[in-house]
Image (cartoon, rainbow, N blue to C red; front, side, top):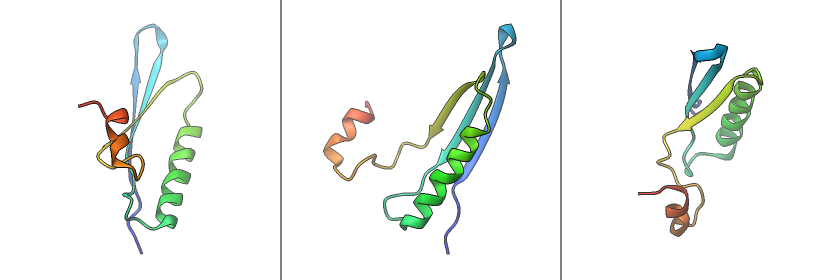
Length: 80
């Protein structure tokens, strides 16, 4: 058994009647089993689908995990 990912959503009312929706999440690490990763992306997909199209959508994460197994590509995705 594993813990499901943690999500937080926040809606902000902006000037001009615009709305921004922020979704913050902590993705499973590379060490997680495939079922856990699949569940994470399924849940994230459902959260994104629930956001009205007229909203500005921002999805954030901890970005500490590697995007790919090849750590040499890390500098492409994370500028330090």
